[in-house]
Each structure stands twice: as structure tokens, then as C-alpha cells.
Image 1 (cartoon, one colour):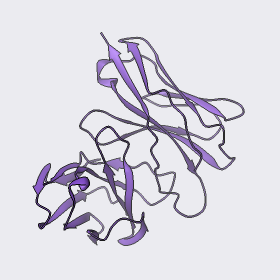
Image 2: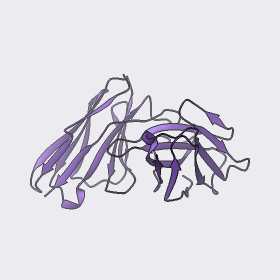
Image 3: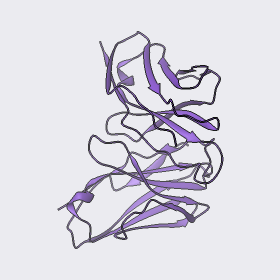
Length: 113
Length: 114
């Protein structure tokens, strides 16, 4: 699976959009970008995933650059409950072991009042 | 019901003890996972079960022994652990062992080995 690079930490004001970047410059054509988050003392939680098109769900939006070398997770109106570690994960779409989730170091997002 | 439950929440054991961690889901999922998470580190995959058969073992030491007695239940048997095995042990499940299937995680069991 391709390696991802994320900033170690970020701050965001409550009510503002949180934009979390992820670099995956070695991503290949059959690899998806997934985002999970882990709130303190809880298990990770799935947020969103995409291949090449931008995606949106009730939690967040995912913007993937045209060359697919980077992406941005957007939480449109961050709340204090969004304070968590956010993991960007690249996963191969076909072949064996597609169930594996390989977590990187993630970005610790602190939402401040 | 999108819940994965894990028991116990906390476990303290000595290096000579034998203990088990339990994970349960009632979502009809056929893939279940064990992850280990050390403090301030990301989760690391240990085992994957698919349709009650061991699919992936990430070279985990034999003192950790997984078991999947049925499609809803996943156990992790612990024996002769070391203090460095102290960690949060997370269980997850998904519809099947495929990339398209979201993994649902339990809250974890915090294990301390003395």
C-alpha cells in the first residue's frame, strides 16, 4: 500500500471548516483513499473514501487532486466533538488482503472554542 | 445495530496468567479483525478472520492465539505475555474482507501486563 504523509497536528476554531491534508504521491491507479478518525479512548471510526472523484457524505467531504497525489478531508463546520486523530489510508482495490487497514501516524485535530 | 462490543474493558494480568479477550457483533458481518494499539501510536493489524477462517496473521507471536468460534464472536487468547504487550486491543468487523466494506471498531480492551 502507498505511504501517506499527514501533518502531525492542526487546530481549528469551532464552527469553522477543518481542512486536513494528506499526501500520497506514490498512489497507484487501483488504490483508494480512506479516512478514519479516532476520538480519545474510542475505536477508530470510518469517515469517507474515494478513488478519483470528490466525495461527500453526512460527515465530511473528500477532495482528491486530479493527479491523485494528494487529498483533503473537509469537516464543514467543526465542533468540539470532532477533536480526534484523523488517519488517511491508501488501500489497494484488488488482489489479496484488500481488507487490511494500515494506519499511519495521523493528524491530531484540536477544535477550539 | 452497528455496535461491536468488547469485554473486558480493562484487564491486568501477570506474565504467567492465561486470559482471553472477547469481541462480539450482531451485524451479520463475516470478517473480523484484531488490532493492537500502543500508547500514542496508530493501530496495527494482528489477525483477520474471514468466514470464520484465519485469513491474515501479521507474524504475531504465538503467545497471542485468536479463535473465531462462530460468525458473531472473536476471541483472543493470551498466554505468557510480556510487559511490552501492554496496549489497547481493538476488535473490528466488516461485511466481508473487502476494501469496499467499512470496518466497525469496538471500544477496545486496555491490557496491562505486570
